[in-house]
Image 1 (cartoon, rainbow over the protein chains, first blue to last red):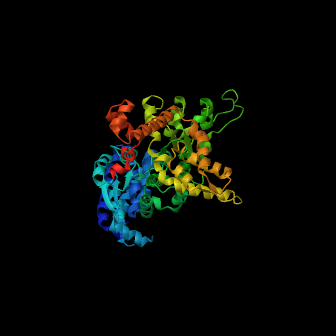
Image 2 (image 1 turned 180 degrees about the vertical axis):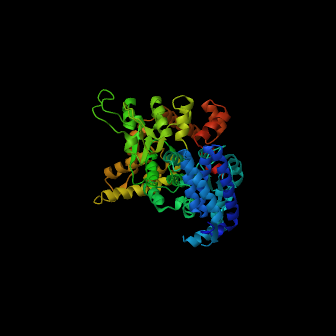
Image 3 (image 1 turned 90 degrees about the vertical axis):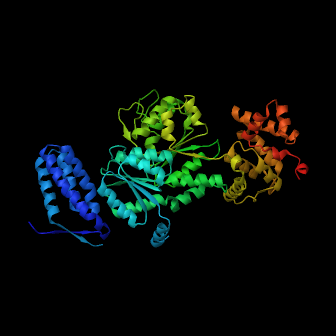
Length: 101
Length: 461
């Protein structure tokens, strides 16, 4: 569980990364709250946003999970939403950023 | 230009980019990319904020998200283009929806990118949007059809080059014979649609029902005489450009139908229950003053604004007399190339003088016809003045004028003769004409007549 996931990120973005990851931790909380409240529109919208923002910063997995969440919310698939929110939380806990071209 | 040179030039004089997105993470990311590439980046987190900053910053490029709460990217694009129709706008969207992309490009966006956006893709599109006119295809397309040295034409071509690369709807205004179709074709040839069809149609040349079926198509049996299915020019031009010449002559009924196609990018043939999607760039033109036609209720206002996104006005030949000599050279050479076995012709000096000052109501087309006629009829290598005068008087373009053109011509000649008689004394001329001096000055101004021309040279010296 505690193994790290290494992600290479463009050194130009170094100053932005801590804030970016902090925002994603906040997203996890928002997603859990929204799912608990049955607010699928919010889940879909956060998923859509994650899809658009992850890959650009170098976190392709965040884009994949965002796309998955967006689709699961549209299909009202609670299991899939739950699973992917957990996966996102775990990914954020394990990710280690290396700045390289 | 090498990449390094481009980057050095960029640093010396950075282009201002206004970046608009309601997502802070996207805004920061794209800002870093653009900043590292040497742009002066300014950001706004909403469409309204962007509009506020727009006037202050005067950006050379706008990059905006499509979906935003208060004022979305499409509305921002429209507002930005009201202030500056030629400003490139790049649209970003989380959803790759074709109708949005088509609508955005028709409204004049320079590019439509889907998130997540790649760094290189964004930078390529930004530099492309800022350097459009440097495209060799664009230069080639415009140098083939348009011959000029006047600053009015240079400015027109500069504007046309800027719009060529997008799908922005262009409206060409110009007198008959000025080359509206030539300009439309050059825009098409310079556009990414150049491999697809360019289809011109004169909307004034068809009765209403025929025009409707020409444009939108019809099903078999849609009306008496419709013995087979006809796909229509919108569908035939799919992927390419449709040139609607004399769009001002289109009947009101059809204007409604045209407006719908331009809004929905779908065509419904006469007698059909189906809509067909079309991706067509529309360039329209008229010799009429459409703003006046709108006021008179002859042309729909909504359609006028939809067509008139970027207006291009072609000057009449009389307004660009300095081009007459280069046009004559070009046309004589073209004639020579077509008939290499004929003796080479040129105009006698007094014939050239006459051509340079002729009224040219039929514009470049009249000039082309006149040169063809003179080259064919001249018995000598030097085309004499008498032949030129005869060709111009026999030209139907100068004989059949509209009532307004005839009145204008009469009024101009009248003013010239009165001014000659009075040797440029406006007070006397006004008295003879039965007008007060202010009115008379106004008339002279309308016809671009300078009283100083008529004053006695010896008195002036």
